Image (cartoon, rainbow, N blue to C red):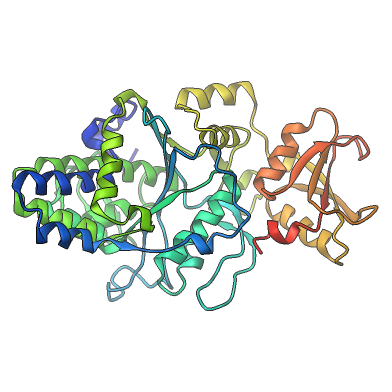
Amino acid sequence: MAGTHRSRSARSAPPSRGRRILLWTAGALAVLVLASTGALGWLYYQLNGNIQAAEIEDRLGDDRPEDLSPDAMTILVAGSDTREGTDGSYGQAEGMRSDTMMVVHVAANREWATVVSIPRDSWVSIPACDLGDGTESEPHQGKINESFALGGMNGDVGGAAACTIRTLEQNTGLRIDNFVSLDFLGFKDMVDALGGVDVCLDEPIQDDKAHVDLAAGCQTLDGEEALGFVRVRYSVGDGSDIGRIERQQDFMRSLAEKAQSKLTDPAALYDFLDAVTSSLTTDPELAGLRPLYDLAEDLQGIPEENLTFLTVPNYPRQLDVPEDTANVVWEYPSAGLLFDALARDERMTEDDLAAAAEESPALRPSEVQVQVLNGTGIAGQAAEVAERLGDAGFTVVGTGNAAGEAARTVVGYPEGLAEQAELLASRLLPAATTEPDATGPPGVLTLTVGADFAGVRGG
């Protein structure tokens, strides 16, 4: 594959402790180094004060998933791709974007952790979000990273994180406890503070859009080059976002290794930690060196073989919507099994996912037929929902009115279609319940839109 790391064939090997998640490794290093040198005074407070806190609790709404494992930690980690301060050198973009999005689940017993990468081109249901100006966005289908842009319309990282968390919770059923955001320019500063990071490329990479012009072979990338390298997409390999996720993960491991190699160079290490902490925004619970160190210490205690890196099972949306060649959708039931397991604080490995996929063949929305009945008493609701279902690739066979008004939204299914009903409820209407219903046409789900539909839409 063009432009890949030569070490990629070893990707399945368990990552070393030095390759763990950069953000918490950096937090741990900060405290450990300062403690060992006795420089706990103004240096500690300088670094600690760099970390920004953003309150998000009051922006998440009341319709959140139940917290099935309160002692576990489920954390959103996002790269904030704001162009502020770049003078247009990386292109123009309103507000914020997020090219990197991960959900990190640390088990309640602290004996295992799972990092789930979320492709930014995931086509999902985006709920109504606070736009920061007293108004809300309309619920709709779109790329998941649009949620970060909507919430961050006014440059507010907290708003961006809140909208992304709402979107993740609604589409996964996972309760997100915390968030960590690393901004666009901070990544570049981190690499430069370490004197660059080494990569080995099988083939040259040239991409004007990402400002990348790299020769084949082993070389040291400075901050500018590294930023382009982790952003490049279309001119490398198959041009997919999945390929970019793999390159980003590889590079972050290399960066963490380089940071550890600087333990004996206090000046370089301090510059690195200053760049990291200056680029971090977190929820109040994680906003400080101490809580980041505590989390890093928990991660350090996890056995190598119990740290799992996964990407949400997905397939090209083009299989459901032929004209969409750019996006992916999550593959069910595999994705649902993954999210359900994490919600219950149960470990799932790549082998477990593969076995589940073999046991339960993938379901496609285009294979699911549904009739939509309006039980809200509000004209036009069935048509609105039917349009959203069509956008998601489902086959709508008809619309109409329910026999009476319904308090809740229900997916009724005939015998043998329970998994199809779960797919519909999970993919588009996460607040909907499913129940057996033999009154509808054979082979067709019956979606009755209830009075709670406003809540489903994010109101």
